[in-house]
Image (tube, rainbow, N blue to C red):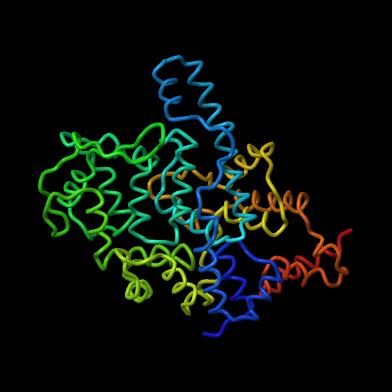
Length: 425
């Protein structure tokens, strides 16, 4: 595999939010494989994996329920306005600033990827604090043990509210989480039966959380302790057993490998030869996610022409990259404007459209979103630091802009468009 400068640029875009020319040059001096290893290892060892600070005081679960129980419409309306009009925009700007400033952008990229994969939305979850709690769970576990990540996500309040696990009792098991765990999260359609859904749902009965600490709680009185048969395994299975059994199946390895490759390179199916090859060295029941990410980044397909044009940037990824390049910081005062922009672009973080997360590519492309992206870029250029380009001679600014943005392989038409702008006063 021969890596060119554009290969390094793409690596930093896909495993982060772009890089400066000096970062690209440093990476090229140590080689592509070493750069991948360094990027992944640095992210694994990063202090960014700790529980990150939350943006300001947040409404508690108990406060929300007390307000709802009061049935006072004025109070409910005021609290809803506070959550969606103040807390959510602040949380979004906080996360975008994390993407722009983090010394380990792979940590934030994996958090974004898993947010789309293990999708939950504030529209149902109700509280920004619960969404941030899940966000930090993804951040802490995004490159570690796959089984720990899946179990941790299953036990956060946001997921238990989103898919109704906390309502599931031995006498009335709720099938939402058991079904989506297999269909969307871990193994994919066609690899389980309705009987498996029923058994899994029984195993997750009694799951809940402490409303004050948000810690996972198992209510034994509401848990089904009967024998269950799930994917060929029989016994008094609980929820963690279900996750372990799913992840032990080869189909789970292929499904998860295909999902990560699709997020980092271009969309593929679980039965694609690439997914099968990647899955051959990835055991999700015992292994970590980091080596799989490294395998994807060092695969020949990752730096192929198909990968170069294989993904349209998600709006939050697009904005995070611009903010990073231009050293833009979004203040709390501008949080609502940022959320409005993201809404126009079709992606409000912490509020995906459904359990499937956000679709890829064509979903982001329309005349409206293209126009909005151009306007946003212009706003960011006005607010940001463009001295690496503006300090150059006019004759150097086209190549300087391409270098600054990490697009050394820019097309001739792009360069001609930039040259026309340079000539303007």
